[in-house]
Image (cartoon, rainbow, N blue to C red; front, side, top):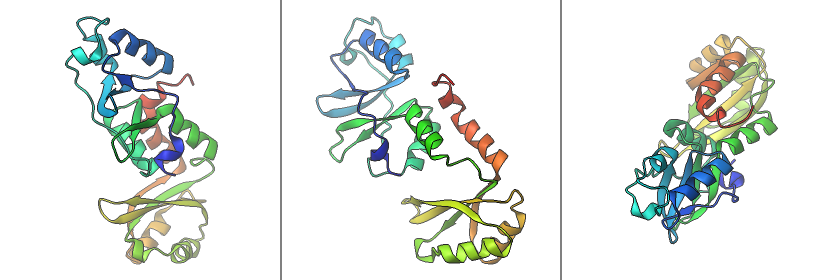
Length: 220
């Protein structure tokens, strides 16, 4: 899934003429600790709740203050996993989506991401998860499936995530086995690079560690 498919266009950006009070009100309304700040059509960065609380006066326009803006953003064509990594790495409650002219298109919030994962059931019903890193030229789902089936496993679902910085892909496999040791050993014998592996409980725990700070924004 690409970022553009999860854009929430109901969250407007702040402008340099908006006051700190307006920023706080919007953060409370949208249940966010970050909002995009723009000057005209130019994206300046993310305003944080912490910065607003440090303002000399909440009645002053944001443009009159020296704010420690976070420059994070994503492009509409970026994969959702890249959005998740950016939010997790930078401790964000949302990330803006910008077009090729650096204009604000909307935002993707933590709630949007978790809603998507909940609705797709991506992390349900799998007993094991293996992530393979490979050159796209070497990608053969038939061969991957054959290796897993030779160890009495079955692929329940899979998805591919491009990694442009390394010109490789990550192939995430949901498998119906808890003990992945034989399958991992078989992949390694076939010279596949096993990047990550989890059994179901571990995988959910890993997600929980990534999302702990994100889940705190939701009333669940």
